[in-house]
Image (cartoon, rainbow, N blue to C red):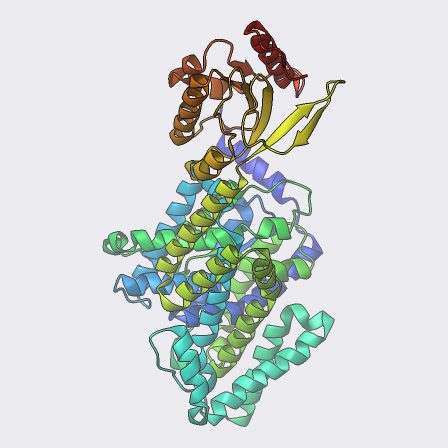
Length: 569
């Protein structure tokens, strides 16, 4: 019986508890940090910077109230902003139109809710780390190249991010001096603040305030936020989605949702719940869906679990989900009371801050990049290919390619995993591993332990590793399939049938030991059980090696009954 609304509210109250002083301080720091980061991320995606601010109001509140990952802050991230911009551009829609933004955000929220309800969190485990490293590094480069105009006053030309980077460096003499100096000063002040341990969580905020005040005092002629957007001193109002845009946004919205969910999946392992409760990937899917549904109706850009914002909250002492709630409420008050001050922030300051964020992201990936390179050539190739795709193609296409690369890596690893290990038993009944024989010796029992996923990609390796049956008269091959999956591929079953036929023609026999009940049901349905012959399937059960012992004993009896003089001991 489902809980009543009142009971659910009481449960939510129990989960929330009372806000602690550390949560109030952490929420305040996170809200202040959200001002430069939210505006910066919106700007690099070509959105109104105000939408970036509003993404730090409703989504963190709703997300923190519902997420199983207690400290996760749900808001706009750089990857989400860039992916959202790419989706709108591909659909030919204006990213500054509030209805288009609301439609995209609400659709992303619906897809997240659906994926959570279908418990599709397991799919993220198939996304290769190599692919994610390449994608994240490509996103970081996109962040950097996206603010060259704001930071230096020169807009580089080129059909992709790498050519724009090259063009920007080659045209350094064309950079505007005032904008470049302001951006450089912003980076310098950030570096000084970052060097002080207590100021490290708010170093971006310190740089923004100090340099913005200096520009205002000196009267430096640079572009300001108010030159591109007006920030109303008001709370975010209702924004109706442009319903006619939904069909054009559906495929791209899935890409945005996947990017957001993949980023958020790394938060729970990095930031455990202080109360000791367990996180849930599917629960996080649902909470981010709720956050986007609510945020989309109140002028927010698509949101997801932000590792940077969550890290700030945790570093500032967050102890409960109240930290996220406080951050959203406090940011709303800041916008309401001092929204006009944000209009005076110089765009080169935001450009400098984004350069810092992008470079930090790349620098933070250096260990992951080296790990992938040292792991295997195939992983390195997948990482490099994903990076190139992220810098050359629209992000929604790069995401699809990344998923394909992950699938290919999984298939190759599954195929490599499949192998046989020979087992021999001594006079005391103890089993030892041994090399797999090239041929089945006649009149003897040979035991092979199979390990793999029963995927069709394993076939070439299995055909090569199985012993030759030529001359295997009265030989018995006991194949231990204890770790075989419940539903093997039909290709593997077909290969087993063919090998059984070959062995039968030579007067030998194949026995399967340690067969789990679901696998046994498949063998019966496909007729392979009858094809193997009577008593050729030893079911799993009892002690770990009991099925193997039974199969081995029965194989020796079978050989003895056929009059062989040299059964294996």
